[in-house]
Image (tube, rainbow, N blue to C red; front, side):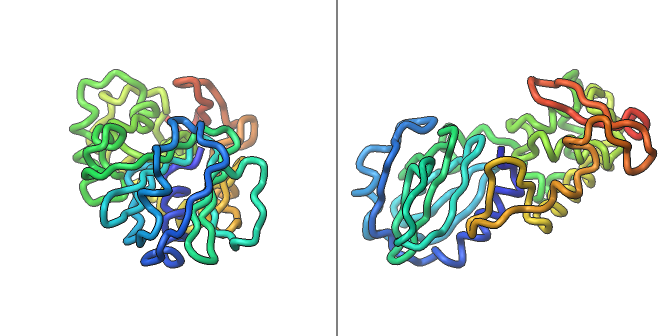
Amino acid sequence: MPELPEVEITRRGLLPGLQGSVLSAIVARHTALRYPLPRNLARLLAGKALRGIDRRGKYLLFRFDHGTLIVHLGMSGSLRLVPATEAPGRHDHLDFAFGCKILRLRDPRRFGAVLWTREDAARHPLLAPLGIEPLTANFCGDWLYAATRQRKTAIKLFLMDSHAIVGVGNIYASESLFRAGIDPRMPAGRLSRARCARLADAVRATLEDALAAGGSTLRDFIHSDGSAGWFQQQHDVYGRAGEPCRACGARIRALRMGQRSTFFCPRCQR
């Protein structure tokens, strides 16, 4: 699933080519995504200029003067800018035409979402419950320490809880915990203030390194220009079960937590 770095990279890739452009038409080939495509979406947006693209967690917010188009890439979705002459593929379900450029949604599993709101997007039911953004100044060791008090859930599951912290999915939670030297099974409430500070720094550094590397391309995710990310080549633990730890040589272990695979070094992470 595209996580925060992949969604932010998509936003950055789309913004220069689309900001200020007028949306001329929408072509929907398949309307049954995670939610039904909004009715009359083409009529609502045709002839309107795109003012900007923001991100909240893993949601992209396409800003128009009269509302916001909210897009989630689901498990395997991607948004690409392609020439208007490029024929759609089997899983290309939605086209937004901006003159000679097409913003194309590809979603093999159809778990993505395209929603419209005229209200403040921050108050939308999908966005209002979201937690802190981990790349903001407010996310720090003191915040993490306060937020985890009395929490018995494993720290890895806490990091992946979007009601607490947004965008830190399975890959980056595993990598951050390795960098911080913390066992993913550790109850969140047992972390000391010092370990919370170390973990908050590790989360931020991991996400920033992933952004610099273009994100992780593991299955279907690609950038808006069709290129791939390379952060998976820097993974210390994720997807490396049975391989030697790059720090100590112990074998990386895998287990299931919250129905997701978790990877960690039993020697480095305590």
